[in-house]
Image 1: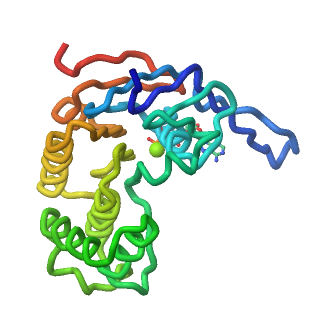
Image 2 (image 1 turned 90 degrees about the horizontal axis):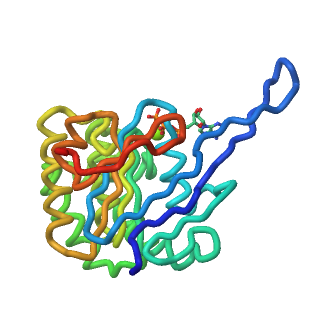
Image 3 (image 1 turned 45 degrees about the vertical axis):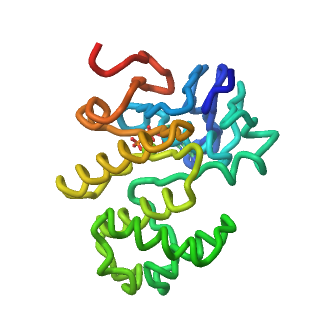
Length: 234
Ligand SMILES: Nc1ncnc2c1ncn2[C@@H]1O[C@H](COP(=O)(O)OP(=O)(O)OP(=O)(O)O)[C@@H](O)[C@H]1O
Ligand SMILES: [Mg+2]
């Protein structure tokens, strides 16, 4: 069977330069990560700062090369078949400042829809629907540089879901959101995955509650190792 996400002994070592000692040190960010995530799963990756969550997501979204092992997303190798992987996925990172500040919310989102080849009318419809869900319809024509941190994060969430990805990667999606907005976003993610069986979510978080409330399965990651992997309530 084809997994939505599969990794085999995936590893990533960063070379960091010690500018004082003028030498290179190696930092192991991921060690032999083996994951098998099925279509339809809402999978959570829970771990502290520096655990390797973002590194893993960057590899799975073809933005960073692994230094060992392999990974497949939607059946395609993230190194050898990037062109096949990219149209099928999307990613939202907490705290990212994506888009162009000079453009309005609508213009930014429309532009990203064009990158995915979504017809204009369809893009505009989805933008309206999703902005409504995150309670931001009144900000359609606000310049994105004028948005607050939380509102910008909501715009990014709309950007991620707008392309109807098969697999979506959410790196701390509720970062910077107030309690109510975070709850709404969690409810939306849950609803999104329930609507179509072929959708898959990989989400990272620091919040135990978020992992517990939302995810079908949760893996704990620490110092680059995946420590445990189970349903939250067992
Ligand atoms: N470009 C880079 N160059 C060197 N080291 C890096 C780089 N990116 C990440 N690291 C290091 O790799 C380790 C894992 O970082 P990563 O960003 O994957 O952690 P994280 O689990 O996402 O943490 P956080 O919860 O703080 O976002 C950390 O020690 C980090 O300092
Ligand atoms: Mg991170």
